Picture 1 (tube, rainbow, N blue to C red):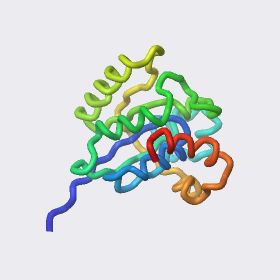
Picture 2: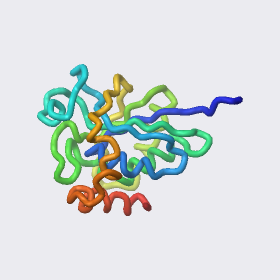
Picture 3: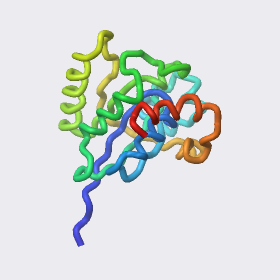
Picture 4: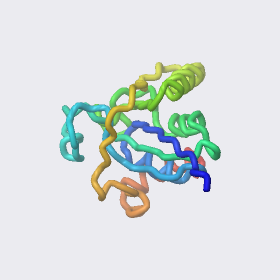
Length: 171
């Protein structure tokens, strides 16, 4: 039996609950996990990342079937669900942990991310501040942060922040 090819994408763009809620609804996405990436602290947790100083961003790791959805299409969704022109902030979430980053796993992802940023910049007035960085260690977030929207759809944050992002992304 032939093994299905699975690729991985890692993005940071504000609260990981929002990113996870959108990406898990996309056809071709096999799994989404919230976590921390881009910092220097080993085994970070929500408390240390939220307090600042670890260098980590809240991020999501996406496993996808490249025969059903391409990395370039995932980038399109990423741009739709957050403001790539706002440094270290998405809405009321403020701090380095909410910065916009494309963490690339290989040269092809780096090139696609750079090309996507150039194309998007043509349609925007403000400069894009999203960084493109090599993927280091992705640290999974604690269990209570996984599938947060699915488990807590009536929570105020979900109703007022995540639901509009889902609508903006077409869900």
